[in-house]
Amino acid sequence: MKICVISGSPKGEESITLQYVRFIEQAFPEHTFSVVHAGRDIRKMEQDREEWDVALNKVRESDGMFFATPVYFMLVPGQLKRFIELAAERDAMQAFAGKYTAVLTTSIHFFDHTAHVYLHGISEDFGMHYVGFYSAHMQDLKSEDCQERLILFFSDFIDAIREKRSIQREFPPLPVAMPSYVPSGRKTGVDTCGKKVVILHDAEPGSVQETMVREMAGIYAGPVMVADIRESMMKGGCLGCCRCAFDNICVYKDGFRDFWEKYVVPADILIMAGTIRDRYLSATWKQWNDRSFFNGHVPALEGKQIGYLVEGPLAHLPNLREVLAMRVMMGKANLVGIVTNESGDSGEIDTAIRTLASRSVRFAEQGYISPATFQAVGGRKLFRDEIWGGMRAIFKADDRYFRTHGLYDFPTKNYLERIGNRLFSFFLDIPGIRKNVEKNLVTHMIRPFRETIEKSRVLAKRRAKQG
Image (tube, rainbow, N blue to C red; front, side):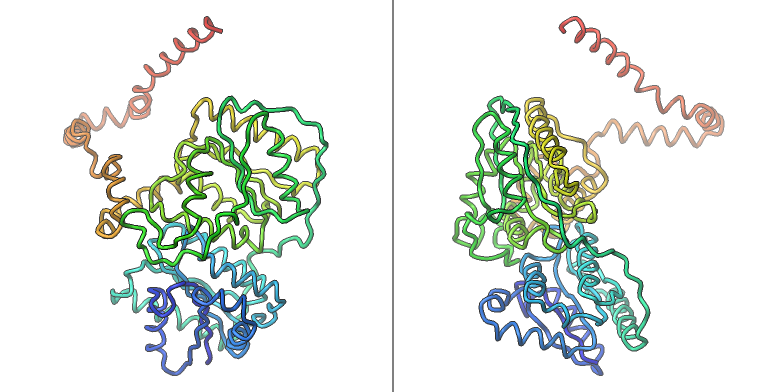
């Protein structure tokens, strides 16, 4: 069979992900593999129609499609995102239709699932039959267990093609048209209270996104900085070279770092506006997010109030909502809210934008940051373990930050707690004590909180007197 590999890595043949493909190629010599270097050659494909046609012919001539890509910022690299957009823009989706497809990703397993969901949905939108995914840690290929599982995975993919396996669609198609938005024009100014408000966007003239951005900027009764992310003059997408890992300095010499320092760093309130293209925002936004990796694995948005303005069917894309929310929470910032134009009710959208503005200022004044949920807690621990375990020799800037901020917190340095737990465990081995604890376990669990609750009553009375 002819297998077309869509490689998402900007590193081309030197991609770690592609080494997994080469292993598969050697393990299955009866099949032929052709590679479309979407990550490496996207600029050529955009500018040279002949380059695009060569890539598309590889897709047309194949019996099966195989996405092989690293995970960048919870999704595929911006270059592969642009390749997918280009296929839709040039009405080339028919070349993919009817083919069986599978996904291979490499990462440190940080939000690899959101990348898989994205490619799954895209595959179905293109009319392909999605067989499944293989998620590998970057170093897994060196283990025999991984090698055996990878062979089994690819064997199943080949069997699916050969059997013409029936596969049900999992993600419904997205709405083709979205409602417009016409603001009422009645604005109630929201005092910024001296907080710095920044709105970043990539709006096209006359778009709903542009209208939402203009309305948002007009609601704040104070100075607001509004900037198009294309003004950052990015020369290209993240190269995955990791040269920024030493001192947080990107290999590109363009305007991105200055743009980040001018708009993102000083912002107390940061509103990001985008339009849904396929199942994410635009490739420009994806590239912009990828390029922010020069900050490494540290919470670069820490302490900020973040809001989103989204044009498009976000309610149909819980995966995208998760990515947007976790982008904020992993940055130790606070997600104030997300406003979309989905309802088509301009009055409702007006109110939602006004509420987003007022809450952003109130939370900024209070310094409120919502507690982290499972995804962010797990993500932070994953970063901690990976940097400590094998990445700190290269990611020196991360290592310095983690050491300075006490993030290498394992095992716990609370030695009294460790000693107490060990003694308590010892006493629980005594039958009489264990029986008593089992009987009163629920009461024991809430006893430490009673003093805190009483303190809350005292504070409430104090606030009442002051009010």
